[in-house]
Image 1 (cartoon, rainbow, N blue to C red):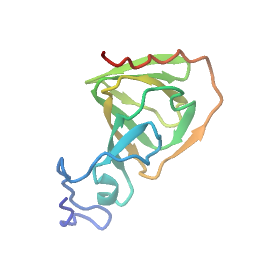
Image 2: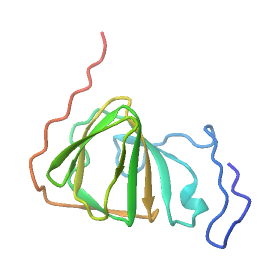
Image 3: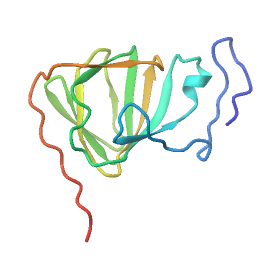
Length: 147
């Protein structure tokens, strides 16, 4: 990981190669794995960018919540995920990009075994706040192991 060239007092150059960081547990959700892309460190906490992938089958999902964030996008790299945004179900498939407006109440309730997405949020230290359910949520699709 090269973060040696400073471009301003608050940000620095960053180049994280594929093998520089690994997917790790311990992120916001225990049923996902997260791979840090070095952006939070390079931007002095202004922005976080990480890869998120499925680690366990969906059972309860994220629950209804919103984020205290100024900017939040999800770009689906592999697989799919089903979200509720307010009272609207949204299927996000590989190649899709979603901008989650600040404060939108949402619930990621279902995803494929191969789901992987890029998430970019500002600020890096955004918070999640549990919210009451505005509507019912469909059941997740169980992962079926091939026999």
